[in-house]
Length: 545
Ligand SMILES: Cc1ncc(C[n+]2csc(CCOP(=O)(O)OP(=O)(O)O)c2C)c(N)n1
Ligand SMILES: [Mg+2]
Image (tube, rainbow, N blue to C red):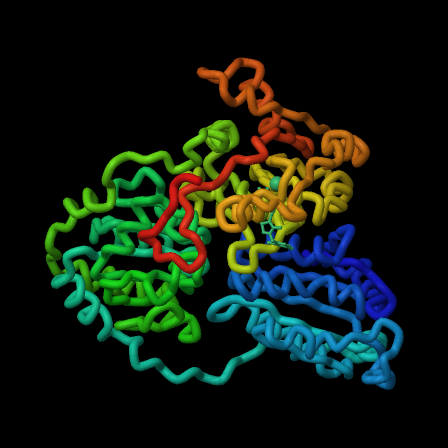
């Protein structure tokens, strides 16, 4: 399956696609295509493919390529380029796609002869999914696309053997166990790598065996079931109080496949100040980002976690279960104290409660994303999808298209803000045309809410250019796209217990076999708490304005 948008330079490829057996999904914007390809890849682990023409088609892919780099998404983009005789002449729709995306890709090629195409495609797909997955760009000139050659069958790419890393092999478990045996406050941090390596089951077994406090990054959500007694929830800027304090106080931090960016660590120099760090990671470039790692365990988590688990089976560890109390402390509201966010949080809880076990939830970028992450309780390894590293508004709706196509029978819930939804609103046409039963929710707070929250807290309530009070009527827009839409007032989510009418509305929204839009009126000044202000340590969370 490939997602794309045609144009002059890529026309020979589209010509050949007809009747090729490859399913092509026409989106309404190239950014929609690349985010849809990412959604497909994130839901399945397979390589997502996006196709675009040269110039503006290719530049419209760039945000998605950057997004795939940040969040380790296997992606191949194929772009048409002007014919080779015109390269470098500022020809019509010529942009240097290779140069433009060089710092964003794992691997890229400009191809100007048909003979190279089979080998480049094979190698590109190999690099997109190997090791830490990521984006590959293949830019092909029109003359190469137009030429003919005898196809000798698919090529297989064989990489050169990699040197065995000093930390791999069978020695590391003893070193980690030695650290565990002397630690008083060990914690485990679970990141995306666990899901990418497909090791959620061995990881859960490992954590059960250790019974130490565990927490997840936004991309680690769902790896550990929320009801697990030692699980403290999400860590980082909008993480739970328990997770952030546990991390801050810990003396040994086991990191499983997380790159520790500043949204997770708070001020990097003050991250886990008392802890030694053991980092299980496939990509050595991700080590030492926040603080120097004491013991790197480099390798595929699919190998290192089972190896560690096997070694652990033979030793008896001290009982740390009692330590969880340190992280618990007094109960505190984890959402805003004025209660302005409560109806939205309730809506998310009521939706999540009704979702079948294997559903996929997508969140766009902003306050609604953080509420959606904070309330997420399911334990489906690829069940929560969001643009975490790049934070690209407009991601969720097109990505949901890719998810729903990859998993046709699955309930796909797509949560967007009123700002982000308008960044790829044109993809409603793709949803409608394909009849995809995506359940779309807009949390309509009439603001670029996350920016407004920062303005309120750090810029003296100077709400510069974040007001969206002149939003269009989203229900009317959905109807224009021939999609059923409903608006739900926030007072309906204050009723205790939930009124039967609101309950029925949510039930039928999720049960429908058609695309559905639900627009929810969120209080314009609702905030996401706790919050670690930029530049503060994880222990310096704020809970109120
Ligand atoms: C493409 C892009 N532009 C700008 C931003 C900066 N930004 C982050 S959150 C946000 C506000 C999002 O507003 P909305 O979609 O309404 O979500 P809310 O925060 O209100 O829930 C903005 C502008 C971004 N992340 N991505
Ligand atoms: Mg908003």
